[in-house]
Length: 150
Image (cartoon, rainbow, N blue to C red; front, side, top):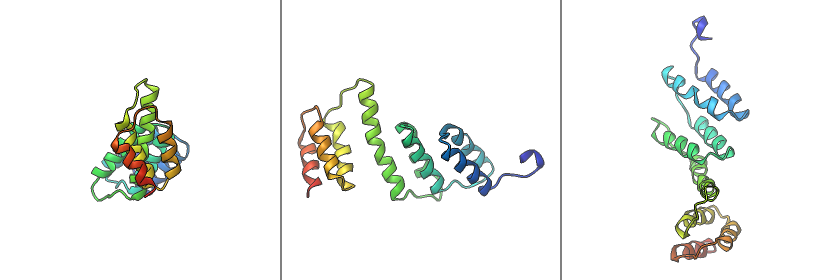
């Protein structure tokens, strides 16, 4: 396209990125973000949200958080509820990574996840996580679980 003197526009980039996202090629899709910026093509909320969700589906919490941080720093874009919920969901992935790396979580590790579940109305999931924790709950954890029913 560029070798014919035609600069890619928002539509052509969006079409390409949508195909890469549908195919699950997050890393390949991310290589186009600097090119879009070089071509003065605005990155938008939908694009960032799709990339964040793709990172979450791939189990890459650090990349999802990095994308969310980039979204928050992007000029003219403000994260919406969906984007914030996706960023919050990384807590569960990070806990899984923590366990996989052989690091034992403590009450402080569980508290934000329990709070997120409670805020999202997932009371049974919060109680289930609470009952399966293998750590002594602290006051913060107890209050979070109690608030799930409040």
